[in-house]
Image (cartoon, rainbow, N blue to C red; front, side, top):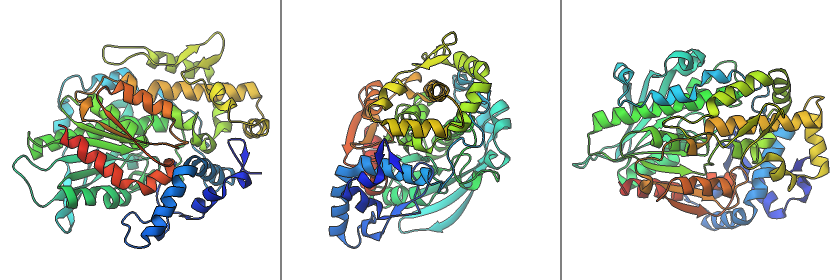
Length: 467
């Protein structure tokens, strides 16, 4: 029987099933792409009444939709799970403290060695679209660990044709999990921003996605946890380079911003923390750390726990050593919220996994997940979940980074019924970004991804206006 947080899918509300019936494969949520039928097209060219009906349904069934969608896709084996092929991987590909120190002196000397090859692809109504590519500015261990296909960066620049004296405000858009290509961010965010507000956009394609996807990878499902960390490491440096390039080429008066959906929102916070100048920030449907989604959120269903459990059992000392090294504080990075006790062989982190999930798990669900964890004991399974939480809290927590220069120029957008991103995680991010504005949209992660691009664009515009 298919389950969603302990509930049989047949018991989901009729309204949630109505929304599920509107889904077809196309967009991107949790590594699988989808979209709503044309009756809920964002442009609202037709069937406005249907759009409003779907929106009202999404407001009250968003969490059920998130859980049902993830459970159906991954319990039926429609797509592979994250980290199913490899487990934790080599955590040493990211050296948290050394990587951050690369940006202590601005600009990093190696940025001047990178050039972007731009080609204009087309001219639209009031804007031009350019495609650019350049060699990733990552060096050393990070560069060597990137797949060959990911070492060439691909970007798309949507530039308004009109230009005021202070230059066009420009935002760097970062990808959500599984967002291959540029089309969604270009069509739903960048083009309307250029047409309606004269705001330019540079869309960065993440490593492991689209034109940068390695040949061995199936879809968006990363083989290792370390691939997720390396994806973030490269995205941060590449986006910082783009902000540097824009400042050099668009002028000192041009307002710059960074924004991202879901995973991209996490990265956008880290980038704004490391950029030495004023930059607007708009994290959209983003958690404080990736642990919120993979360990205590709906992506729990999308994670290859069997591979992670085997890896944790075989390489426990090695993995704990890496986490302990990276969890310490330094001059620019605070200590990790996660606590590792090697003697007890158990990890404890903020938002304790067992406490969070026991509230929503039935005995039947717990047994199903334990059986899925490849012949291991229930304790070993719980330890693998706790270890993933500690790893993600250590490497992906935005509050470990310095507070950005202009948190007052930050507008956060979160969903009221998001099963991927908890309210607690959003509130912690908002508290860290003192002076930021937090806006709530009705619905869950999946429905908001499709229905609230107007609110996302408004947040980007308003954040830039505060600089």
